[in-house]
Structures are given as structure tokens and as C-alpha cells.
Length: 427
Image (cartoon, rainbow, N blue to C red):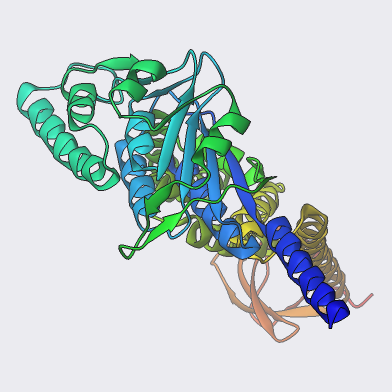
């Protein structure tokens, strides 16, 4: 009986240890401006956390701000999440400015290490120019009412949320904690996670749960994030969009230049992703289809390899965007690169063989024409120009000899679709 009790107790202890070992927290780092790349990064991070069974997401925040549209999408995702977001302004000297301050208010638990600050969330134009008063008031009032709703939901200080938007005020993390705009003033990451443990937070669906912070599993920024960060800056995205339209216009008005069409097509897809008009996955699919189209065109259009190179770039970037490790569909570069190169080799090989065949056919045709006799079927009054029938086809001809209808001629050369001929002498 005692041995049975001991066995059950050991099993319970083992189960508890396994459960504790299984607890994890996914860790991400936001060190750049808030753009479409950040939206995609956090969306994939949440999918990874759910896939791995992590019970919280730890976000390191150090950002000057960014796109209000991207910020809204991030806030919407956090409010709809069933996995708590634990957001910390770090390292010392870092800040959560503008859009970052708004995102911090949406986090289930937020905090800052000492010597960090938060605030200055007044909307401004991306160009830095002065905003018309009517537009400024409209944007400020809209942002204030939106942020107040988020703040009430999280039970934080409404005055703080209003002041950082209307007056662009900024506060140290120490002050923000005293104002109850931040939940925790931490010494470091470990201290923040320890203080977050056990807090009760409201998740999507109105359910209240207890925060669990386990072993950190890093989800570092990858190639997909870096490419998106490069193209998603609002000013650059706008210039990319307008430049792509200009290049496509040049290609349409001057067919055959090829390079403007290739660069413009790829740039247009990139800019649509940056504007949130195309989801990253759909943008990846568009790039893959565009790349295949370029490679097919390479077979038929002499582009000196421009179409082929553009096609390979589109295939590679499209594959990076389309397949995401965070979703569980792991596709490493060791697979992407060989596949892209193999497809490129196939298309370039077909193009080479097609070109070689066309040249061979042209060469053989010339040889056959020179070995055959033609018959004059029409001729001008001088007898030097007209048409001949040869090898079942009708060709235009020019001749130094004066020819008559029904005379036989021999071909001496070909200039495009015109044959050079001379009178045929049986001798």
C-alpha cells in the first residue's frame, strides 16, 4: 500500500515537472520603426507561440514610433489575442515613442527598465511638414478616443493616454509607473518576467487568466522581416510605388526595353505589401507567379538575361514571403535556393536550346534555298525586282540580271525576307 502511494506521488511529481518544463514564453524584439514589417513579425510570433504551446509572448520594445496604420493593426491583434503580451521598454536608454507608446497600452502587462521613457504620441505627417489645423484636430481627437478605449480595457491611466497624444508629453518609466500607465518598473528582463508571473489579465472573449512566464524561446528577426523593413518605410514605400508606376509607363510606351517593366513589376508588388494592400503571403504568391512569367518570357524575348534575373529574384523573395516557419510550414533556404536555381537552369536551358534551334533552322533554310531553283512569278518592268516561287513558298527578290516571268533563277544570298538571285544557266 505504501509502495503504491509512493508510486502515485512520484508520478504526480513527474507530471508536475513535465508541465513546468513545457511552460514557455516566446521572445521577440522590436528595435525599429513600426511598419508593415512589425505587423507581420508580431503576427507570425503569435502563430509561433500558439504552435509551440507557449503561454505568453515577451516583447522587447525600443522604437521611435512609426506608421499609425500599422500600429492600429498591431493593437487589434493584441486585443484579439488569447496569448498574453508582456511588453518591456528595454534596454536602459531605450524608449517607446509615438506608435510604440500606443502599442504599450495595448499589451496585457507592460513595463520599463530604469532609465527608459515613453510617450510623445501626437500624430504627425510622415514628411515632417506642418499639418493643417483641421486635419491635425481630426487626427488627434480620433487617436485620443481610440487610445482611451484601449486604456480603459487595460485599466490604466486615462490622463496619461490623453496627454501623450494631445500635448506630445513624454515620461520616464519611473513616472509612468507612478501614474499607473506602466504596470512594472523592472531592473532587467528577468525581473520584469518574474513580476509579471501570476498577474490576472483579460484576454479576448472576456476571459480572465493568470499570466505564466516560462523559459524564453527566441523568435529573432529573419530575412523576411529585414526585406519588409527595407521596403516598408512610409516615404520609401511611396517613392517605390510612384517609381514603379513610372517604370511601367516607360515600358508600355517603349516596348522592348524590358528592364523598366521587370523592375517596375517587382517594385509595384513590394509597395502594395508596404501599404497593407496586399497581405505578405499573397504578395509572395504574386511574386512567384510574376517570376515564372518573367522566366517564360525570357525564352521568347531577347532581354540579355534581364527577364531571367528578375524572374529568379521574384521567385526567391516570393518563396521567403510565402512560406513561414512560424506557421509550421518550415521551408529553409537550403530548399528554396536549390529549387530557384534549378527552375532558373531549366528555363535558361530551354531558352538556349530554342535559340540554338532557331539559328540552326535559319542556317539550314539558307542552305536549302541556295541549293534550289526558283521560278519568277512576277517582275517589275525593268526585270530587277519581283517575286519568285521556291520550295513551295513565295519570296521577294532583287537581281542584277534582267529577268522575265517563268525564268529559272538561283539564290545567291538572303537579306531578311528578300532573296538575292541571278539567272540560272544550265551550263
